[in-house]
Length: 282
Image (cartoon, rainbow, N blue to C red; front, side, top):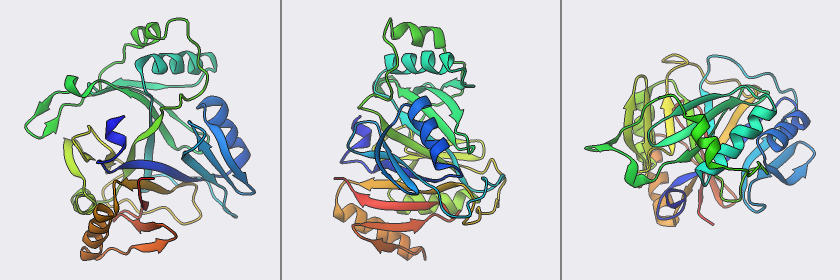
């Protein structure tokens, strides 16, 4: 998983505000395959490797259902280590009668589903980077039918046993209000566009196919959700070291953005109001 460790800046844990902590915890453990890392009254941290949280569920008081047609999370994307792992996931979802979408993106093979609050989830595996096709500075991506039978065959007789230890937060895809403004913000954070798409952009560091997806599919100028709406609270960007993080903070402040320090992390928001935790690789 070389795109999700230094020297790259990559996506880390995602924080979700949920309407029913018990119900969402059951979904993410029983269906998605996480383990509970820690549990408090209104907060549960979920892990794949038993050490690092990948999703943190929080149930605030007076939480309301996720508001439609707002900025926020389009999907969080869990990257599995192998194609066989994806095959085991397909068998597991099929047995549990989970409704799935599926696509071959040329760079990856992906499954799509939603949690009970309506948050999108992608579960995918990457093709080897040497198989990706680049045209100048843009990587070729598509939405082709998935060969699910071939993927399942890859898993042989192996059965799903939850998310494998090597699972990482591969990318985060966001609804935003204004693409050019949001592009400038993420460029200030150190990302570059690697694929333009209709009403969308895909950005990364280190020539990954994307660590961040941005789209205006909920409408250009879509409003931010209210504070008491279920959905994305924040997601994390992990920087390789202090200098790179410090440069990103300076760039955001130069754009007029606000960055607050909280313990060893920094908190900001993109122009669409999506919360971002900035921290250094541990």
